[in-house]
Image (cartoon, rainbow, N blue to C red):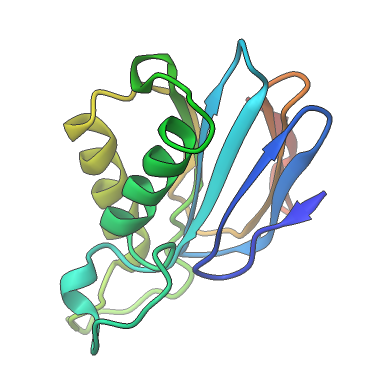
Length: 160
């Protein structure tokens, strides 16, 4: 398994897999091409690069830049047609309940919304997702079957 760390974007092809351990409010975004058994995964931490304190950050950190990076590499370097890309999502939990409003309040929900908006802008369909709620997830995407395995303490194992 190729581990995708916080704010990273990584790619895999048959027979490799991509995974993230311990997703909380972050969103794991997988873009893949079924016919070519190739995929990219981003570990999105925040919804919008406008939140950046400088212009130097990993493209996987923000929903807007992560989705663009995934598409750019898959269509450019790997020659996949954007029309042939599909998406699967996991994460975006609300790990800490609070009544106080803050600039980063409800970050899990905001991350999910931002990722979906970016995918919608680019016309990339979301095939399946397991998002929200209040529990963490560990995910692994298998290029061989184009399935996403999600493990949680609360719900056990789910395959999308």
